[in-house]
Amino acid sequence: MLVSLQLGSLISPAYACGCGAMVPSKETQVSVDRETSVVDWDGRTEQIVMRLTVRGNAPEAAWIMPVPHRASVALGDPGLFSELSVLTAPEPVTRHYFWPRSHDWPFAGSGNVGDGAAAPSAGAPAVQVVGRERLGPFDVARLAATDPAALQKWLQDNGFDLPDRLATALKPYVDQKWEYVAIRLAPRDSGNPLRGTLDPLRLRFASDRLVYPMRLSKLASTPQQLGLYVLAAHRMEPRGPIGGDAPEVTYAGRVDPRSAADDTDALEELTGAEPVFLTAIEQSFPHPERIDGDHELRAADADTPYRIVTYRNQLLTVGGIPAWVLSLLGAVLVVVAAVVLLVVMRARRRPVLPPAPVTVPPPLR
Image 1 (cartoon, rainbow, N blue to C red):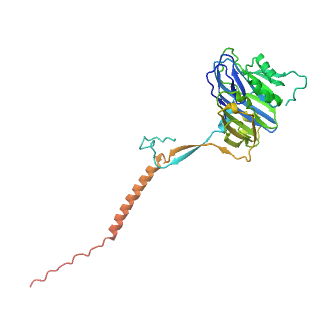
Image 2 (image 1 turned 180 degrees about the vertical axis):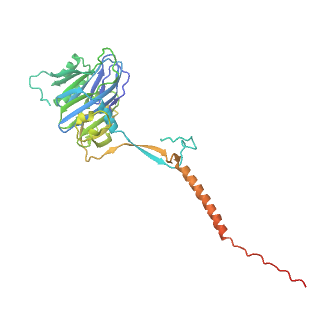
Image 3 (image 1 turned 45 degrees about the vertical axis):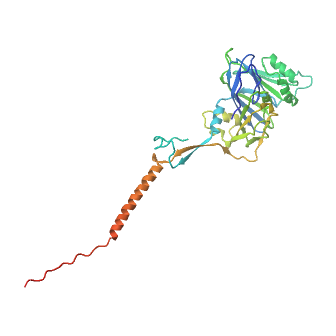
């Protein structure tokens, strides 16, 4: 369920994630190989858990996440992603075939191979720092702003080096009185490059609608892939493509967090103990500059389950012996038995000739 960015070897470009703008520090490079996002919504509160896998030579990078109401931020549980990966994995189905194929014996050996906070009051500063904390490799600032230019200046003055075009891109959020979570990715050991899978980050905020911020991704210069795990009371679907290809559901079904096939209880911790409907959605954005809004997700017409099925073709065997061999042997035995029976029956029907007459010579005189 993923946001994957394949970034070129440019110096300090305006990279973007599915949920916000991201750039490395100056004269360095960074790429986000994968971003997996989990969205949980109970009708009143929304939670977004994301995990980035990055590589490059940048010792630090920054991005920003708009949120409709004031958010709390904490580290997420890495076990959540392994649980969801197991739950949404394609269902393997074996299909048997009878006659041998090119990779089967006798052609190729004997093996069988299967194929909320209120808006700032009048006179408040243009940028309000709601909170700032260090969470693992993240330097997190929670902000409210009434002026996109002032917000961008605060970010630059406080070590969040973000694109010059950010002020324009943030204007719709400022107009709607959203707030922001600014995140600087910085290893604890100064000077070490960002590399590998980072700790998950969990955002929680009030929301009467399920929304996934995407508008800032229009700053990206390369095609993007969006993947979402959506947890809600019903099967969910985006209201529209927002400038990308048609979204595709890759999994839909009701799951019980208490019986997740994993050693952790991360899913139950996120959603509670009651069953919840899980929808996995993937979408391509070949031209990210065409992104014209955020994803708003709504309940589908029906909670129709769906799961991808992967087929493995396998030669049909009985007791390890190919069924076609047994069939041929059986056919030979039937033929032999029929021939024997025919011979026996024909022998029984052959007429028995009477014995030759006995000639008695005449008596002597």
